[in-house]
Image 1: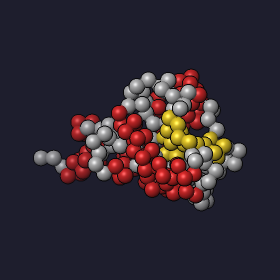
Image 2: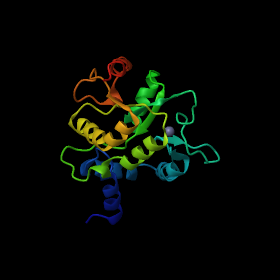
Image 3: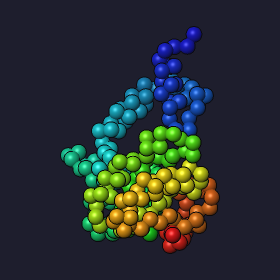
Image 4: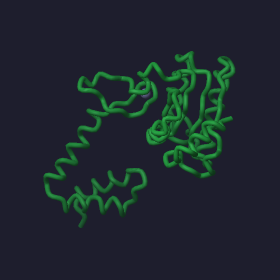
Amino acid sequence: MEDGHIKKLEEYFARFPGVGPRQAHRFVYYLLWQNSSIVSDIAHTILNLKKHIGQCKNCFRYFPKDASGQYTLCRICSDSSRDNSILLIVEKDADLENIERTGLYNGNYFVVGGLIPLLETNKSRKIREKELLSRLTHEKSIIELIFALSAHVDGDNTVDYIKKILKPHMEKNEIRITVLGRGLSTGSELEYSDSETLRNALKNRS
Ligand SMILES: [Zn+2]
């Protein structure tokens, strides 16, 4: 008979991205094999995650809070030397970090938080639609929006959907929409693109 504690933790692990029931089962047994101090350290680290990591109110990326815990904007959004006329839209924090690492882009970001699968019916639930609209309404300096979503079906579908909902706003404010050049081959994940690929993709945006 399966113990309730094991089952409950397995169910939590199985909710993690890319983790199936078999892996979740292995994770639980991995923890059971560790000594108590390691397990307690893992639990403590998880508990502290929300306390020490904040979400930027502007771009929605996660960033370490300072000791006061008061910061609401991340390092990029509070940097006045960045070009605030361009907003680059990425799916997730890892994509933003990869582009930032190349040092090739000096504009601002917006983490849209997901992609819309082709057959999704509740489209707005998958992405930060209201937050993006609100940012564009309040930040009058933005004149170009660059889509930097992964080049596959769901990425393209998301670009189409956002373009459609932003259309009235873009026309009214004469904002240009561009998509990263497809130096990124079809199916490629932005998160793993090297800096040369990203340089070409930025240069060849259209
Ligand atoms: Zn930010």
